[in-house]
Length: 251
Image (tube, rainbow, N blue to C red; front, side):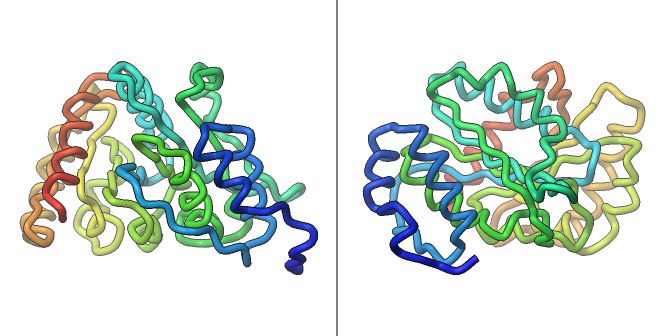
């Protein structure tokens, strides 16, 4: 799509509206940067923490995001969710997958949820994820959660755009084998073994510990491995404490 300045509303005007809490302007401006990737979004400097949530398909990323939203809202924190979904082969739009889990938050004025279609982009994100994050930063949220599509070992692009990378794993998903491989596991700042009530959770933790010990500390930060059952919100408080600890470490 060609870029036409006359066809695009003034982005500064839109960003000012976003800064004032206009969620409609936020949604509209993210659509603008999706349709016009050439648009440059001015940098917003604030205290927002950007968290990337990634992992293989089926480990419970959306359930984890839902549990994190509930916890953050319980302590009166605002949150934006940018959830990357596979693209429809027919329309090119996002296949919303299990975004239905987040419907209870749709009417909360302190929660903003937006799906982004990959549109064929590799790496677990969409081509305009960085621009969408830049737009959302103007909304002065306390947290921005970026959920990737289900990824494999080589799809690690999320690490470029977030402050903290959360790797979600689950027993029985082949992660014990993946734990011995380079790639996705090397980018984690915090590891969550979800579905901890299933057999094999403790074994997976031990496998992860072995792999991380071989890799050594990550620039002075030792990534914690947490157990949790996000369907029940078990362990979400410890998870958020670990994410906060990573930010405080400055690593």
